[in-house]
Image (cartoon, rainbow, N blue to C red; front, side):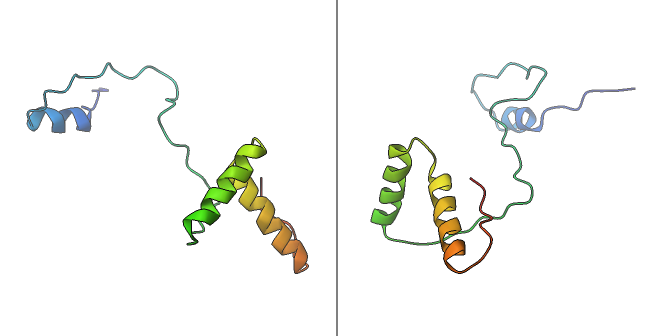
Length: 90
């Protein structure tokens, strides 16, 4: 007795009278639109002037890498300066 559960988003759209085009049922296999959970990591939020972010973004573009890799390199440089293990993955 394996009755397929209805799609909640579709039910809500129908009950609200949505006139949007209904999407086709999802194909088997992972979707490119589903975010992969980042297990074992935590966000680090910092606030700097816009120019700092822009400069990091420029450095990343010049080196054909990501902002996260540039920042990880900076953290590792900081850790090395203070004799700590360089543990920021990039």
